[in-house]
Amino acid sequence: MGENEKNQNKMRYEKIIMNISLIGSILFMLSEGFMAYYTKSHSLLMDCIFDVTDLIMIGPFMMVLVPLLYKPVTEKRPYGFSQVESLFVVIKYSVLLVITIQLVWDNLYTIFHGGRHVDGGSIAVFELAVCAGCLIIYILMYYFSRKYASLTIQAEIYIWKLDVISSFGVAVAFFIQILVKKTQFAWIAYYVDPVVAIVMACFLLIEPVKMIFVNLKNLVLFAPEQDIMDSIRFVAEKHMDKVYCDIEFLDVIQTGRKTWVEIYFKSHNDLINTKILLQLRNDIRAELRKEFDQVYVELIPSLPD
Image 1: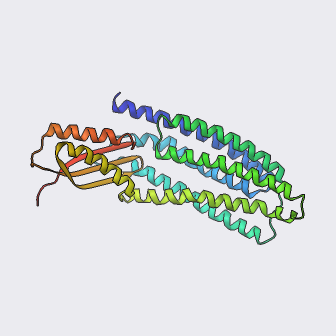
Image 2: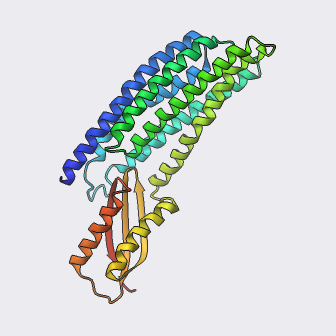
Image 3: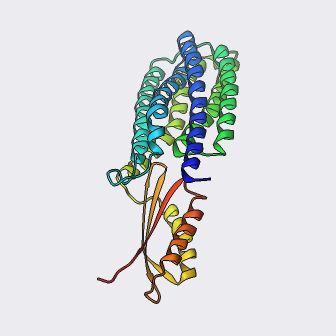
């Protein structure tokens, strides 16, 4: 199978997975929006806003960005459009971060002003239904992602996984609220919704902060994390030792789903066989492709000053 055909298959699977996420987001956005309005629950509003934000970002990604990511690199665009994906992820998670912080502030205000009364029974049953629906979407996306999973796909799957966990947690919290109402601690029930909304927000903040930091590093072309560097160095050294070459310097750049690896090396006998060099590059690249999506490897002889 040629490189172009492989890319076409990857793009096809990516569109399938993103379409599943798109359809799921639309369905849950509408249902959660209605229930948030009906019950006045900020916990449901939190879920709804996350779905709206995700939906707004998925559309442009599918229609514009995905085709661009499979265009070959050129002299004019040495990194292709891969940095656009990093920028896209930064914008997406920055929007989620700002919205989440605002909702946390609103719910803290509610807690200090007597809490909020909501229909806990309706919310609990609804959240169990949402949990089941999110689980179906997650299973479908996970199944298709076994064929191909880019950083964006992994981010979408992670969000649906969080939706499953958070929906179940919210359902449990409101079932507890129903039980508490029948005790002498009934006053606590007024604080369940804002507290649950804040806990959800804090739980969901972890991934946006992490992804913003990682993709900002990609945008300014910083080296990846040390464990990634060590993994690439291990593979390169294993193959370089076979032809009696030492790595002088390892330059790694990650932008979006693409990884560029430049290996500056020195031969023990100062002789370089181009056929051996070509095979060496292909072997290193083949092994790195087991771990990295789109990887480019260049071997550069280290010349004396």
